[in-house]
Length: 211
Image (cartoon, rainbow, N blue to C red):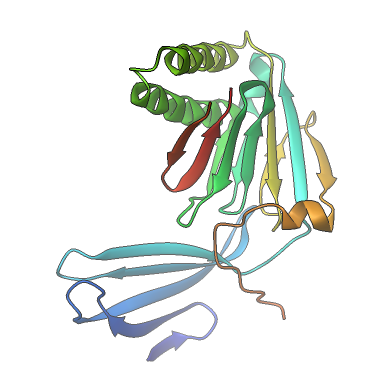
């Protein structure tokens, strides 16, 4: 192992799972706003194998944020989703849970709705031959688009057992999750403590769209 800095970055060696040649894994530590202390992991091989991951090294209190979209101004509220965040939109029956390779991102409420709309559009195409589900999918698309246009009231909830997700708005309601509520949530990642009729779509995250 070649160690450049025990705190900032280092490199380890392993074997490619595809061609079995030796490859290098790069580990780089950084402090990211809202996410805290994280470790970026990257590896690549000449055979085309690629791997990237982000491990959150810190843990905060389990938290729940809720914001009701009531007008165009609410679409500009900042939305922070870590890899352990579960997103819910009760009016649409939509829940996005962390998967094995979930991604973290910082956007605004409008950007979040755009992401959700893209998933619903794809899921609707999958059920094009099922009239009831097709009608339901098209109705959800219309509601989401109306919310993006500032004409539909929706509730956005994000729950995070690691406390690294947030909705940054004066209107957002924030509260701590109970230990039981936190245990019932998925994390979708490895976490190290540095201090001590449904339409379902599986990808980086697990999306569930209810009736």
